[in-house]
Amino acid sequence: MNSRNLQLNHPHTPDTLRTLNSELLSLLDADVLDEAKLLAVVTERDDFIKTYLAAVDDVECKDFVKCELITNKKITEVVCSLRKESLSKIYDLIKGRKAVEKYKKKNVE
Image 1 (cartoon, rainbow, N blue to C red):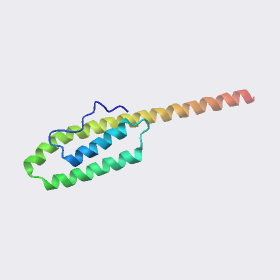
Image 2: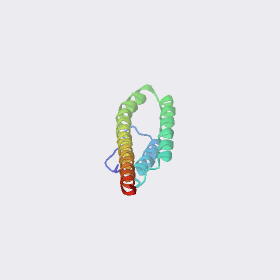
Image 3: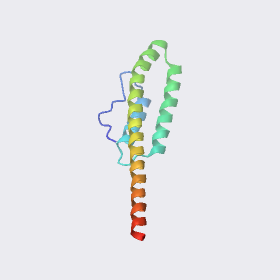
Image 4: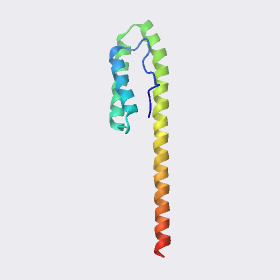
């Protein structure tokens, strides 16, 4: 997955979240996606955001949330796209296996 054009940071992104976003982008740019690490970073990101929102004033909270909703939508779109790609690969694999089995049956008879 090429996430070079994906922007997760916004003017209200705290430094800790910038670091987590960077980790997330690195995972998405990897040749082979490490789903366990992706889940760990997304979970850590979520935990940080909850803690952050509890600690900031209402104005900053409102501004942050408006920007972060857009960021979360982008992340969701990318992850859904990756899921769709994975399902397509699984489907192709199953289809290929069935073709091989059919070929083997035909050649055995």
